[in-house]
Amino acid sequence: MNAHLSRHFLRVGLLAAGLAVAATGPAQAAEAVAITHDGVRTTADHRHHIDHRDSFTIHQFGSVAAARADNRADARSVGCTADDACRSVALSFQVITLSGHDVRLSAVNNGHAVNEHCDGCQTLAGAYQFVVSTAAPARLTADAQHRLADIHRRLDTLSASRLPAADLRRQADALADEVKALLSQPTSLTAAHPARPSVKVHRQLDGWQH
View 1 (cartoon, rainbow, N blue to C red):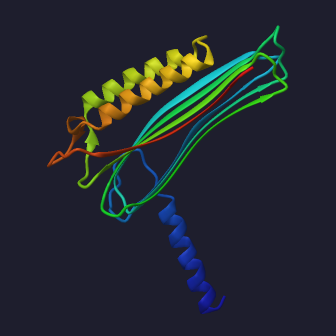
View 2 (tube, rainbow, N blue to C red):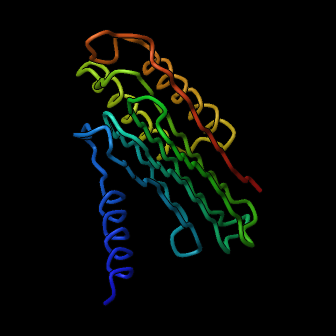
View 3 (tube, rainbow, N blue to C red):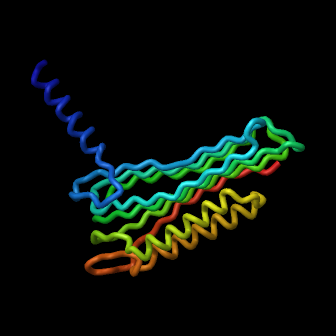
């Protein structure tokens, strides 16, 4: 192997090693690259008329140079009839905390619902992504994590409910508003010099009710 190829493979190896850094706790170095992917998928059909799942994940990256976060919710209803309707609900909440200056962030958030030959079916996919940015390294307090766990429990109850799709959408949005309000409070984070964090919310709801 010539020297040029050796240097090429070395660069590729170092890049792969950098991209492999992904953790739910704080990153150890500001040069770290954090990567995470969360999501849920549901399918209801004539064999399994009801399928509901939800996800509520928290990733605390600490100081990073770059981060990629993917969050997806996919719901599908297939081949049911108005007299024997299906219900498919997928809800995914993703919370990301990170710190640093000029962090290169790629955030992807997708909710997608599909009805295929499914008269009378209710299908809802909701993807909610919360990105909390601070200048100095910070972590969620124990109290904030406890309150987020309570919201998670209510999300579990909501996704398993038989509420009409329109009501379910409104209540999912209400829970998302609670998460944003909580994360926007400086007291929700531990830091040497607490300051109001920047909270960006990405929301995509897609639903069908035939």
